[in-house]
Image (cartoon, rainbow, N blue to C red; front, side, top):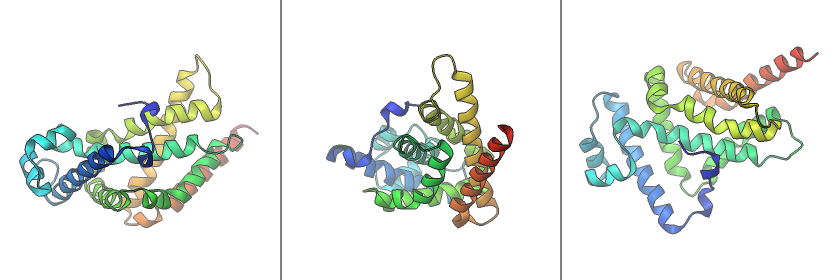
Length: 215
């Protein structure tokens, strides 16, 4: 898993990189469609390659196996969020930054040059998560991806220094766990469109707990 230093805006990438992103998303969408239809144990590389109208060799340029397709969405969404959090005004609290991001999320995805495909893959991935959340969490490494990316955000936004890795790790894991819990809960409850408001409420609760603990 690359660190946040590797995170860059899609808009700044070359035309070649853009073509690679488009191809990766095509493969991802084909794979997720099959995973939705057949389940995690009944999809092969050959099937995904046929559905995406590519060769098996091309598939392996982007993914290692069918289950590796599950990692792309959490990685992309995590990095988009962390870029935005790192770019928030210096005097703003981290919790306020999260609130601002939750409200901007849909606009941010739509503004991407590949926003349509990204929205499709996110919807498909969400459907796979809804049917098997624990398995997808394990296979996609979603929590690890999110908490690892958040470490730099926590370190920089909260001013942690050398020797405070444990504090950074604990807070990053906590934020990641809240986001994952609310996301999967909204899917299992059948209210995915309420995700942004539910995340807002969850981080309001974190803020209230923090205030209570410091008074």
